[in-house]
Length: 88
Length: 256
Image 1 (cartoon, rainbow over the protein chains, first blue to last red):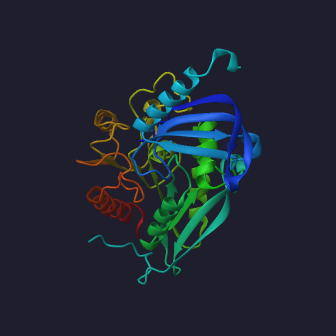
Image 2: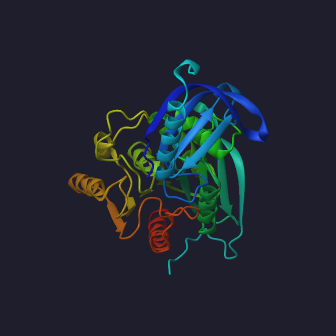
Image 3: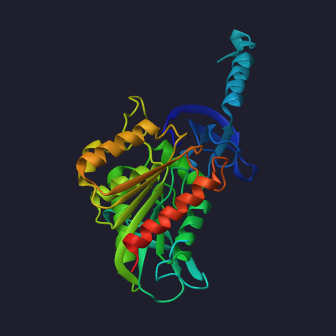
């Protein structure tokens, strides 16, 4: 289905994008919908982008729901392991 | 076997190219057009691409309609947001912007219909077909544009309710359905959840009450996007039967 369900937020960081170049990302869009490339009917899709750099300034991920949950847990575990004073 | 319309080239020869047409508000937008060989009079088909964009499989559909004997066109609904971008990047931008506004969609499809009817090969008839989000946009178009036939392939949010926190700017079409002005063929997957069988049944009830000309078919064992040849959702039984129904429907309403 086209879920139309889209969550957006601002982010600050960098990603390695088209052509192997790093660029600063400013936006993240998360949605559960048809993938472009992954062999699954639906995936949890994450676009890290820099709209100021044009449509091609984007790093895209397409993960199965199970993989996306594993990613969320891994990110949380990694952050939990960091001493509070290092989180800024 | 379906009788091909008179516009079909016996050899299946066709030409396909990218052009610019006038869309909503007179904007110049990109479009992909495919035409059968020869100058026989024929109908036209507007293909509305799915939310993932103006992509290669959609262009294959456009060429298939040309092979079937129609002048066919697919406007790039994301021309404004991301001119020249790859289809997936353009779709990502459009999605992040909240999708395509309905008014703009109607203007773009209207421009595509005008383009088809102005072709020297046109018999004056034009239909519209859309997949996924384009299914809803097909019904929307047929409520506002004078087309001769419309095919909704599993379009969600024609009926039902919109989740209150949905970021995309989409509404149901309940209030617009009385304006539906073309015969409608609907093709759905019984295993789909957007639209669900209940939402399809609701649309069927509404169109029956309104006295509209429509025919719906739901395929057991098929989910959403069963026509999508490059996705795991592809269902050969549903897709083959669906294509045959589309061919018959368009031959009846656009042929001659």
